[in-house]
Amino acid sequence: MKIKFLLNLVLFFILPINIVYATEPLEKWYFYKVSKNTVLGGEPTFERERLIYRYWQAKLTITDKEIVIDKACTIPEGAMNETVTPLSYWKSPEQVDKYQKIFSEEKIPLENQIQIIKNNLNDKDSPCFKEDYTEDFTDLIKTGNFMVFMTEPGYLVIFSKNLEKDRLSSATYRGLDQQLNLLGHSMLSDKKNVNKINKECDYPGDGTYKYDSYNKCPLTELGIYFSSVINELEKEKKYSYENDKNKFYFTKNQIKEFEYEIYLNSEKNSKLIDRLPIYKENILESAAFIQYYYIDKELKNVWLLNMVESDISQRVEKWRHYKIDTTGHFKLLESISCEHRNRRGIVKCHNG
Image (cartoon, rainbow, N blue to C red; front, side, top):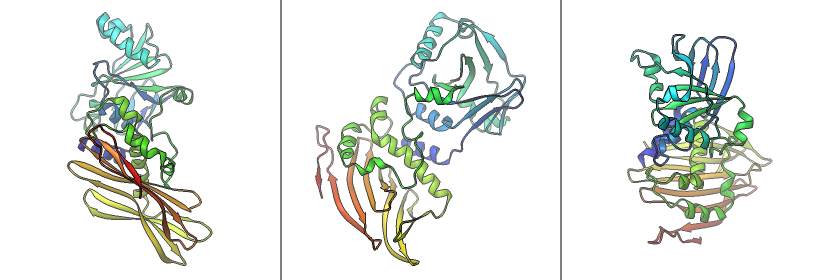
């Protein structure tokens, strides 16, 4: 549980990363993806997700002089830059075969001649060391139209020169590549997703799961997406929207250190008419309770979904649909409540 909470914090606080080689001529490369598997073997882990969260907005610009990372970390001109064969770099046919397999899985060519840029960032007084970039990547490999960071955990962090073309053929990073909408996520307007979530999210929330389960679960997308939404709301103290009748704005109520609510307030003629808690977050030692929301662009409907995530499983607690009437009041139209999973892993839900 703490692992996933820390991931939300990473996404919440981290700034977009730019990696720059400082002099002309410039070549621009953009984050494409992180390899699904690691050359070290084993199931994909949260380490892959951490790398995605950290680098998904990263840009790589290259010349023949230096690499500047996030305007704070420089790999100097003296960094080793050489063209070698895969065998001379990895030293054994067995290692070459391992990496060839990972590259092939990601549809990245591993050419007979590859350009290697060594990561010489082991100086503890270096800004790079202080920013913890050394923990992420070892060497940078140029092969074809791709730049590939080799990482300590064995994942490949891949940058593409043809971003739009390549990303269209890549698996979507759920919740990251969607246009941000402070009115929430439209998935919640379809109550059929309640059963889908309960069916596909039956795995522990502590990181001990198979990656395919994590990737299929709609709560994965909601968690990543709303981390960005809440981050944006935090940057601005007050967002407001209006329809032909009323004005609406968000406010936050901090209850405890790891518990807070965000309200949608309706106002008319500078007078508060009604308010509805639309987002909730309560992180405990053994479970997390989250409420997500969606408000239609006409400002006439609100959908809410409450979920609970524990070290045993995840499930929907409640789904609700509110109507915003012409006076600005929130009226409950429909609700679904769900019970705990039974011994067979089934969650039973009912109206009301």
